[in-house]
Each structure stands twice: as C-alpha cells, then as structure tokens.
Image 1 (cartoon, rainbow, N blue to C red):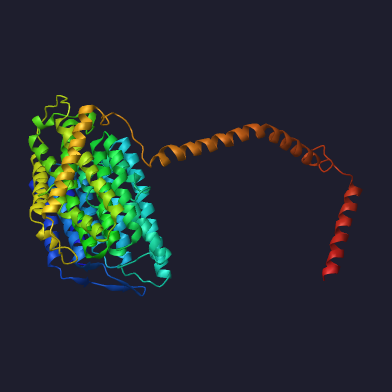
Image 2: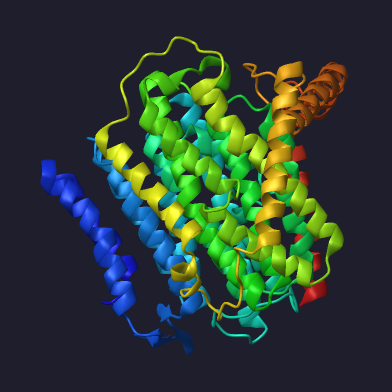
Amino acid sequence: MTSNPALLLMLGAIPVPFLRGWVRGAWLVALPVAGLILLWTTPEGTQAGFELFGLAVEPLRVDALSRVFATAFHVAALLTMVYALHLRDASQQVAILVYAGAAIGGTLAGDLLTLFVFWELTGLASAFLIWTRRTERSYRAGMRYVIAQVISGLLMLAGIVERLHAGAGLEFSYIGLDGPGGALILLAIGMKCAFPVLHAWLQDTYPEATIVGGVALSAFTTKFAIYTLARGFPGTEMLIWIGVVMACFPIFYAVIENDLRRVLSYSMINQLGFMVVGIGIGGSLGINGAAAHAFADIVFKGLLFMSMGAVLLRTGTVNGSDLGGLYKSMPQTTALCIVGAASISAFPLFSGFATKSMIMQAVAEEHRTVAWMLLLFASAGVFHHAGIKIPYFAFFAHDRGWRVAEAPVNMRVAMAMAAIICLAIGMGPAWLYDMLPYPVDYVPYTTPHVVNQLQLLLLASLAFTLLIRTGLYPPELRSVNLDFDVVYRRVLPGQWNAALRGVTQVRTRLGVPLRQRTGRLLEVASGPLRPRGWLGAPWPTHVMVWWVALLLGVFLLMSMLYS
C-alpha cells in the first residue's frame, strides 16, 4: 500500500489548502509526476495483499492493462493541475487530486472490495467539482449526479455480494454474465459508462461543472468504467451492439445542441461507444484498440473541454448562438482547439487516427458488416458535431464582436501540452502501442486507410458546408433539449402530480360523506358513555350489588371449569 500511486495523490491533497503561491503550484504539478514515476517503477504483480475474513484482498495489482489506464489518468491529472494553477479556490484542486487518486486506485485494484471503495470515492469526490460552481443549477445537477453514482455503487455492491454468495471470491478478473452477480456489476458499469437509457446523467451534469471541473470530469469517471469493463467483460457479445448505439444516437442530439460543453458531453458518449465495441469484440486487437482510444480520448477530449473552458472564462458563455469571431482575440486557443477537433475526428497525423482505426479494424476482421457501417456513420457524425461545429461556432461563425484577452498562461500551457500529446500519438504511435496489454501487430498508416479516411472527412466537410450554405443546418437556438432525462424531468413528476390530484379529488368527493357517517357512528357509540347515558347515569345501590354478585359468580364458575 505504501507504493500505491493513488495514495500518493490522495494524501498529497491534504496540505494543498495550507500552501500559497508558487509553492502550491509546484506541489500540484509534482504530485502527478511523482505518481507516474512510482507507477512505472512498481514491478508487475500483486503488492501488499492480505486476508480479510478469510477473503484475499489485493489493493495493488500492476499489469499491462492497469498500467496503461493508470498512466493515462496520471497524464490527465497533470494536465488538469496545470490548467488549474490560476485558481485561488483550493477546494477544486483538492477535489481533483482525490478524484484522480481514486480513479487510479480503482484501476490498480486487484479485488472487487478495493474496486468498490474507489468506485464510490470517485463519485463522491467528483460531485464537488459540480457543486463548487455555487449556482442553483449546479447544486441540483450535482444532486442528480450523486444519485446516479450512488445507484451505480449499490448495483456494484449487490453484484459483489451475489458473487461472494455463489463462492466466486473477491478476485477482480474476468467476471462475465454466467450469474446474477455479473449482470448486476455490468449494470453498475453501464451506469457509469453511460450506456443507452442510463446515460442522461452525463450530459445533464458535466456542463454544469466548474471550468476546471469539466476538464477533470471528462477524464476519469467514464474511462474508469471502460477499464472495469475491459477487465471484467472482454468479448461479451451484447457490448458490440450497445457500443454501436452509443456511437450513433448522440450525433443527432449534439447537432441540435446550443451549449458547446453539452455538445462535448454527447461527443464523449459517442467516443465511449467505440471503446465499448472494441471490448465487445475482445481479443488482442479489440482490447488494445479500446485501451489506446481511451488514452487518446482522455487527452483530446480534455483539450476540447479546456478550450471551451477558456472561452467560458473570458466570455461567460459557451452557447453557440452567442459566440463567434473569437479567433481574432484568442488565436492561440483557437489553434489548440483545432488540434483537439482534428484528433477527435481522426485526421491523419492526429491521435484519433492511430487509435480509433484499431477498433474499426477489429470489427472488420470479425466480419461485422452492419456494425462497421454504423461506426463509419458515427465517425462522420463526430466530425460534424465535434470536429467542425465546436471550433466553427465558438471561434469563426457570425462574429458577435467579442474582443477579449487570451486565456491565462497556465491554461494555454496545459492546452499546448495536450496538443503535443495528440500529435505525438498521431505521428508516432509506437510508444503508445508498446504500453498496450497485448503485442501490437497493426500499422495505421497504410495507403488504403489514409485515402479512405481522407475521403470520409472530405465528404463530411462538404456535407456540412452544403447544409450551412443552404440554411438547412439546425440553427443555434437558445433552448433546452431533453434526452432520456425527460423521464425524471417531465414524465415522473407529471405522473406524481396526476396521482396527487387524483387522491385530492377522491378525498374531496368521499371526505364529506365519510365524515358525516363517521360522526353519526361515533355519536351512537358514545351515547351510553355520556353523563345522561345508561352507563353514565347514577345507579341505585341494590342494582350495583346485583351486578357485583353476578360478575363474582361468573368469575368463580370459570375458575372451577378451568381448575
């Protein structure tokens, strides 16, 4: 446990509120770096295992799969800490360190009990990144976020208990769907991984987080769930189609959405869908593709959230209807945002091209033609709503006259670091491939692959241009678009109010007759007890003597019968 990088970050958060100036900044940057060094100097295998109530607990297990995700989480923590250096609010910095440490701890967990502890801790720590925005909307969104995380935790706990009851033990390895415990754990992961129908919490809450909180949220919760899915359910057939649906349906919502951070939240579900498909395919190529794309997504999605955070900081809004023309006053942020947009769109020489293509290749090798075609559609869609829409409406379309200062230096440094990583993965992916769980026998830069991808991007950009020029592209309107959250925002409250109205009507119709009948019944029943009733009136002495004698006789008779 002493060599656990998770504890280094979490315990390192304790002195942060007491540090000031450059000392605090140096400490915040040093912690993720030190954790990364500790991770890569820890030998593979289980460390510091012990027994608890006869069950094997393995709080630290390092192997290739856990190491690549833990490395990505350390990189995300470093980028977020640099991005947050300008903050005077230490509570956000502490929450991010605890949040990142919990995600890393869960990734390195060798047993389900340790996994559950960090699973819950990630949900609790991340909620503060929503609440610290200190608005009524963020408070309500944070409560909904916590409810979703608690439900996921309860499902996880129920699945673990069921597996223990079935004699499966605490080992965190392949789980599968052979028993109800596995189904409950998969449902818990699906909640945190934003499976269809279970996804509404994500785009409902992430845009309400603080500027820095949105960056942190984009990195840890869902990718922690992807790691858990890859560890426990590789090769599960149903995940292929779940992932395909995840990759496709957010496109339609993202295109009509006005809040650009909400667009990125839908885009996150889209990218998670590709990872889920890779895990469902299984095998070395599928798992490698999911892990590599998760690493890349953590960086380029963080870069996009950083750029929108910088826009929000300088303008006070990220609504596409209110933005435009910012490239004139924020040229560096614009260029860095375009790098993130090119990466998520899988342009050659950018990170998405070298990672997403592994998943597409795995699907093609399994001859999943329908799934492959739908993922191709999803790839074109993500270029529309994230690759083009985000930079176009934020920085170029309909100049609104914004003339603001560039983002703070630390924000631009963090964005530049993320952009360099995106380019490093795209131009020379071998270093990332070497970290993956299985040996990689895949070459992304082949002529057919490059040509096909460029054709896809060219046709998608032409379609976007045509829609914009003809006025057919959905306009950026100030509106609220309800997704599956319509169930708990409209349907359930409506049903509850209807039920209350029904109860009120029944009570109104039946209340008066019932009260009248009840009053008459009470009047008749209480009549003998009143002062002038036959039990309340004074009785003559001889009558009382006869009653006492009668009762005594009955008592003696019963005593004789039962003696």
